[in-house]
Length: 329
Image 1 (cartoon, rainbow, N blue to C red):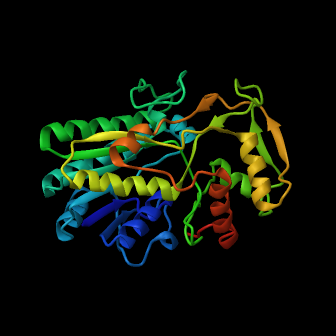
Image 2 (image 1 turned 45 degrees about the horizontal axis):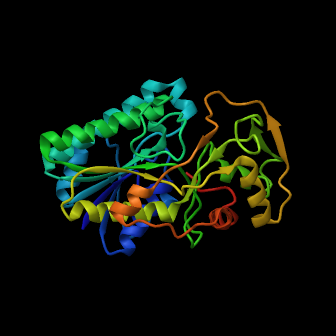
Image 3 (image 1 turned 90 degrees about the vertical axis):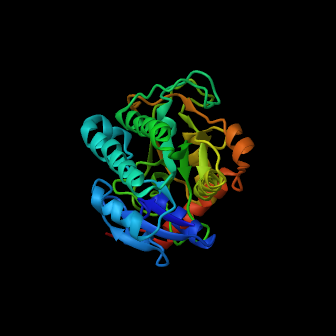
């Protein structure tokens, strides 16, 4: 299949590109490199340094490459930043997706797999979170992702454009080869931040809050390995290619790990003491977020390969040892 991957130079997008190529698909990438890296791009893919907000460019890429389906990753994703500059997120995420869908409609491309987020649920009382939970985002990032999903819903009604929205929980780890992985600037995700300590890039890892309503008082999150996540995208693409109706799915492990548990696991993986320092709570951090992925398992036939959090951390450690300073612009 001829597949367009938006944001294919980013963390998740680059892993998806590699998996698609390995599966025999022809892959075209659009990325404006605002957060992506040329180093992460598989040389077998065709790359356009372009912005999804450029309607005529996107439409020409769709038509000239005979694109049959789109996998859409291109979006800003920093929760904290989204609260400070929400209109930046609406312009890039919502307007960018609107332009992409316009171009797809014009080019008669009818299938899209979308990178959504657990942030569409906001803070929930009942765990694990199922797809039936109330969608109540508590930040601008989550609101933009939900708006993107809604645009796809109505594009299906109007144009017959079928979509699968995959609502990720905490994506982590790196490709088993260690060639690509998580490289953000600034880094905000827990596992790479923890690993900066044994890499000598910080003296300690900060823990924000020790009085949450969890067994050890620190926040609990659900971690899913990047390769398991990408496998779900491959299954979603096949699901649409078989003519199924639009749908949305949670993707997580169904298991919760606290910040303290993640630090201890990283100590075991790296053999480093990894000093930790307690800090004040951050505003807006829920006690726990744990996914139910039962629907994805039942409907898509998805299953996880990485079931031990130490294996997730181990793959990240392999990448960060190979690229101690991350990817370079």
